[in-house]
Image (cartoon, rainbow, N blue to C red; front, side):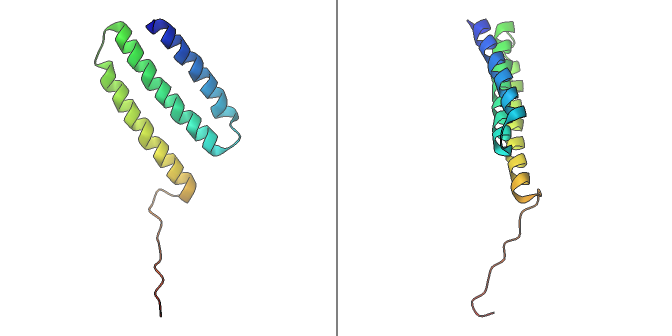
Length: 95
């Protein structure tokens, strides 16, 4: 059963790679890469279960955190064209 789930994950990864390469917009590509990272986490967990190595779940959790932070950083970069916090000017009433 786990082998069939792993095969389904591999097929999903291939479809996501196609979407990441051919996505019409940048955001489609970023979403595909994020989903690819999620499928990779699931695949690491399934392989760790198959091999009887529960410490692989720690690796999967670490990879999930890295995937999340990277996705947020990429989206912030493409929105502001910088990793710095944008300056917001407050307009005074009578100045």
